[in-house]
Length: 238
Image: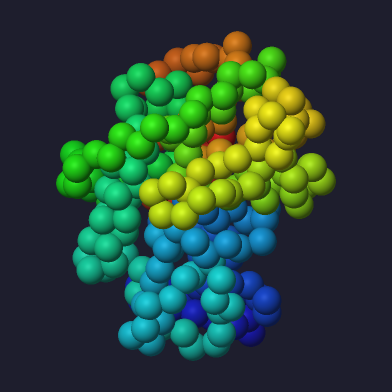
């Protein structure tokens, strides 16, 4: 008999070594997340996937599942905290969804809708962040970067290049490029790199591919991300 955990009262099987998030993804149970991607080692930084296990808040992407766990996921209190995190992410960058090429395919936007965020809650910072168009095939817009480090992990762990890193602290944190000039065009980055495909927002965009999938036909245009994740993605994705 397989081992199980309970997520919101539903028994979910898991294998030894799987985290709560791993088990939930396999069972198509949606736990909101941004910095997690099953391709890469869990990072646990965005805190969006925090759940309550036996009454204690834990990061579901890093905590191994164990027999008999009672996991609370989609509670009002947890979603209120998640919504506050997303609201802070929105005001910390310049996420101008109506003008963003990633709209409809953006995980940040989709999670915000899923959590019922319909307007900003905090004052916008509009921090000055550099846009890097130096690469012939890839556009880097730090205004939309949420510092999830997915591109960093993909470049390091899959591409073997270490093109990206984080620098600074707090509101001064920013994504930097490991090249002598600091420009993406002077790095070893290639459009075929896995790191060019994993950005959950519109911070890394492939040039000359704008609106290849029209607005209205994108992943999250008709279904919330919680439903898409439980049914399986179709169409374009980051």
